[in-house]
Picture 1 (tube, one colour):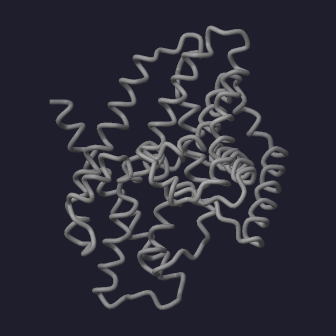
Picture 2 (picture 1 turned 180 degrees about the vertical axis):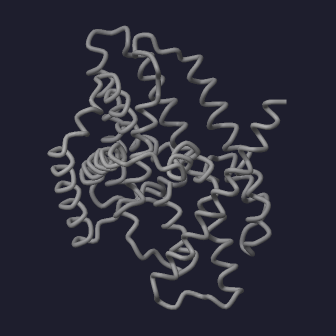
Amino acid sequence: MLSILLFHTEVYYTGEEIIPYACHVCNSLLTFTFISGYLFSKTSIKDFSTRHKFRSMIKGMLLPYLFFTIVLAIPKAIVKDDVTLSDELLRVVNGHASWYVAALMVTEVLFILLIRLTRQLPHPTLLLVTGSIVPFLAMATACQFIPNEQLQAINPWCWQSAMLMLPFLCIGLLWKQWDMMKYLDRPTTIVALFIVVAVLKYIVVTHQFTLTLEPIHVSSFMLLFADGLAGAMLILALCRRLPNITPLQFVGRHSLIYYFFCGAVPMAVAMALNKCGMPYQGQYLQVLLAFLLVCIATTAIAWAILQVFFYKFRR
């Protein structure tokens, strides 16, 4: 989620993205989707409990989504002149107040239905993979023939982005079921992944491809899939070689909290720096300073939220 915080820091502080979205943000989101698939179930697909998973989703995603988006709707309506509280509450209801969390919930619901439909049939894994890829291909095809404006008009809870994320969730689950994570520890695997990702990013930058997941604006869906999968593998391979770093572990464990505040905190920090006479003057070092302040502020907020909730839970 640090990548997403950096992106929003650039946008709010400088007025534009400096590092292209397609070079890191989409990778962060799809990597998180892959990890969500990896952690999707502690049991095998055959023993998967639908009821337990739905309860986990409501407690871990839906309730936090409703709580944080409603709370943040009030300051957004106050700070932004062109936004009203009713507008923000409507965005909460239709799943656009925090689009990635909404899309991830839809992705997991679709995946639960796929598991339920396929696990008792012959070749359930093949059917599960096929059922995850078909929505991706269907959405990619629809985007070629239907204007974005028309697609966005029928996109409650960002279900269209969820269809693009579905294969990554499926691959993450199968990666765990097949115990494949150990192969990412090989140095040759890391080198190969680095070369593949470097080539893909070179293509993205030189051809100025866009890989925006919401609203969907993707120049090449095959490139999105290849880049998202290779990027997720490389990020995980590198993270597995890192020593235990407490601040990074904290961010990883509480990524959803960071995501909920990835827009509000960078905007507040940018406003504070401008009012203090420190506007952006073309030096990226200023962005890094702002990013450091954003990380500190967001971590403090996350820590405070956890302290309050855990304290009440203990009582």
